Length: 308
Ligand code: CP
Ligand code: NVA
Image: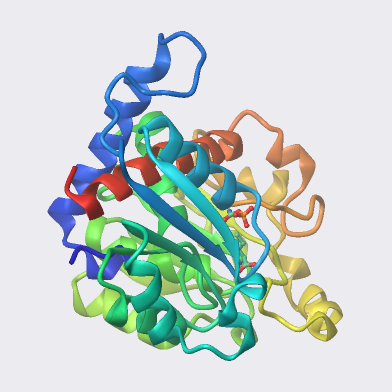
């Protein structure tokens, strides 16, 4: 069974082939007439369940459209509407859904839910975000970086802000793709140390620098994300904003990175909180390419999982 649960659980050769396949599929559609079907339809006859226990714009639409472009069908399900939200176990749900569909994508809260689904499902499971990681997003980010700047290996990526689920997948990717990663943020919002320790154990150069200005020196890519994630209590909003204000990505901070440093944000963004509109809409921002590439890279991830 080929699941796609996290970037550290898929081997580097397979990750590289997913990125290459995504770039090829994107290219193949480039000059095609507008319309949803790819010329190659490897998912014809397949049904994909897309389960959401949290809101989503990009993940929901890009998976749904991606399956359709490849000739498959989707069912978009909300956790609350399923028996999952009314006490049926994840294990039973996974076993049942596997009798109907060919692939499951799930966005959920606890990582344990994703892992239990993967353990009991008899079809591949893809992680569409948990409280701990967001691997599909970082695959799209790597694709986007490489489209604009060539191989990410050896480049310097700086994350400014909350040490959250999106950062964690960057830490996984630093080891698998061989780029340097610096986290800058307040120590109260550090990433879980296991993400940094594991990346270091695999030979990645990952570091923490409290001063955002020093952190971005020599950066090829500056990344941030919302200061309050979906799983964070709203009551923590004001405290988080106070702690993170000094880590806003603004024109002054970007001016200390390399002149051609890219700016990324997985979106949705809170403009003028974690990043200014000037940076988000500026010449170095690739945020909408990132969003588009979710579509292409997830198509490649689904093909990898299904072996088609
Ligand atoms: N970046 C991302 O996953 O966006 P959605 O929450 O809209 O899916
Ligand atoms: N860190 C954010 C990412 C949203 C795509 C969250 O978990 O809410």
